Length: 165
Image 1 (tube, rainbow, N blue to C red):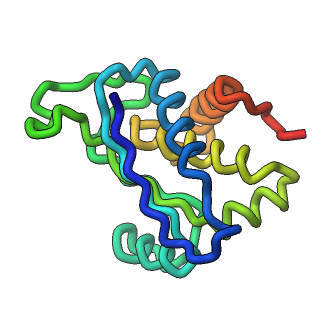
Image 2: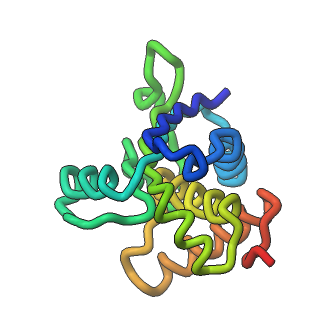
């Protein structure tokens, strides 16, 4: 149904992220958001220098970060309304956008927060998928609370607690 493309540019094998976990998490996040349209998502797993370059080029921010999301469409959070014109005619898929994950930063954060790498991967993937579906946290009030609540619910669906004990 969904097509998820993963490109891994991390040379250090222990730092690589599990592509099966990434795919499974994206699929569960889409299902939790009632996305029944076949979608296409591209994921780039890279290091700090690569994500910094992407961040600088596409967002004008010369800094490394843990995850970036580049949605194709400007959906409203919680209102996934697809127009037939948005479906790619050749593939029959809705291109949702791109996710860029910084594997070394993810591992560092997992250790800092006392989480497993798997749980931190799932969290960042869910966070990014929600961005692709129109969720944001630009305001520190309602938008952020709404997004955090959805992240927690989807983490639970994926088999993770709020904190990974």
